[in-house]
Image 1 (spheres, rainbow, N blue to C red):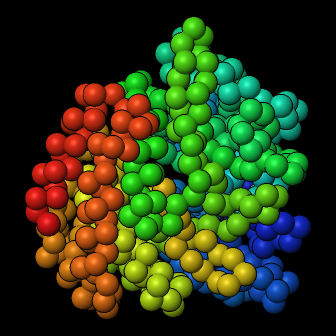
Image 2 (spheres, helix red, strand yellow; image 1 turned 45 degrees about the vertical axis):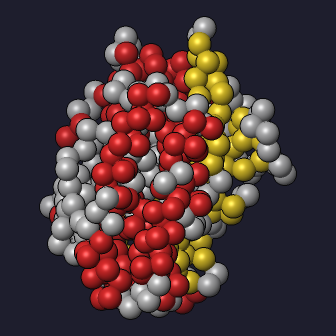
Length: 410
């Protein structure tokens, strides 16, 4: 590819969902195929019209791209890798790369079930991977010692969202073997995401996030399987947090849409309230149990100082039984985040028990008070769980102190 992409097929498995195209004035249009309208499902209820009309995005926030398709694109780390490729190969600056160029680059490697044709990436990659080599490549890129990006790292790490370096891989049951995961995986393997450390992260970042995942499970949140992977990087041993992907089940891909994609919500700025999260959950799932799950997630975020609770950190999965709130993800203590939550709680960025109960009342979560106490109990286990995961003393004490201050308001 040496010119910009102006048309793309949107695919779900072997089925063509619709087509994206850039018009004469640079506007992006989408049109469902008649067959998908007959046999498929609404990709983004109330966000993308489920009809045969040619439609533009509801909001220009994502450079004119429709929210549900913008969810296929990475941010932070993934964009860094992508931008370097386009600059190195084609001399394009970031502002010259169009959303359709980016989707063609992602191709079949997007998070969720959608894929895009024609696909830009044609290079052969090794299916057998070595996490130590990938981790060393991450450190090289972060150090700024090279403008190039190693092909395998760019492909494995080019699709996940978030600012921290990460890769998507397929791991064997005991994590002794690692595959790319972009082909059908053999029996005994599962799709995982492995998170490395950024330059600003403390040494025990992975251990701390694993402890949060353990607390969340005890608190009753729907959590994917998580693990700490010990990886040798140079002459040192690192422990990296890994989480099993909920958008994959063996070789099945699951459709996912985030609150950012549904609501055209800018995840970089505070723009939502948990009333929006619970409201969307009620509308999409029509299930009071799912609304209760959203309330439990909100409570956990509040009680654990997870203030990076932006619009991309809430998602919905479409399966055989319709829509469901996605399992919880990106749960960790917010280092260096401002004093208020990114997503407000009944209008408050730093709430007490009254605000949580106001949300419970508004959405008829009758078990609201019980859920708060269950989450409080799980969070009180931070010291024990943190020590079991080898969290460093500095983090252990600092996080523990912050959690006790929050608990005092409840």
